[in-house]
Image (cartoon, rainbow, N blue to C red; front, side, top):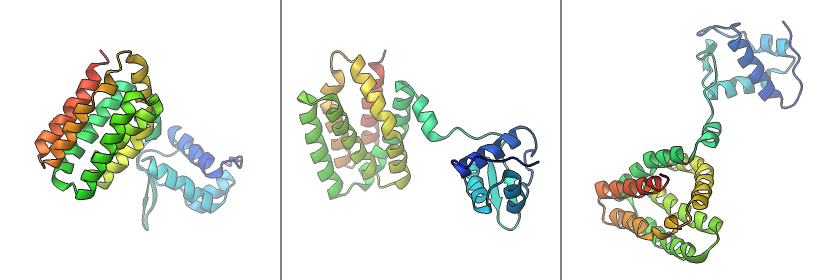
Length: 225
């Protein structure tokens, strides 16, 4: 069977065609795909495009390349990618995700923080306090995020930092939504909770740092009703 692929964007379309054929049952779970040359001929694209398509589906945990053996089907549909999951998440989902990331980050930061991290806390807390008084919402949100990121980076764990950075666009949107719902401006008036997190990390008390991070984010969640 030969299927001509429109040439824009080629690798993405090739990946979607392979995914369609897997979903239709042409290749069952555990099946080995035909070689690059065969697939390239069937789809009317070059071998490099097939390689890119296979890499994309491997990243989406549908295919697996096994050196010297070939490419195999390991799932019949793609796992939803992070961007789509985060776009669909509502405020509560975001806060629950932040609890998972930031509570552990605060715990680790209490053991691993450096003098540079403590200086970063002072700067970001000062900026956040200033922004909370009268800055527009977008400035305040960026100041708040800067402090929370300072806590995460003080954990010196690349995976936690990457998770937080991936989460930031959705956190930002959730904060915009929260501020619209918060006619009493409670979120702007919780500077003490942020300072308490920083103080626990400064004191090198992992359990207290984790507890204060959890309490802060749980308090934010409780304002949603």
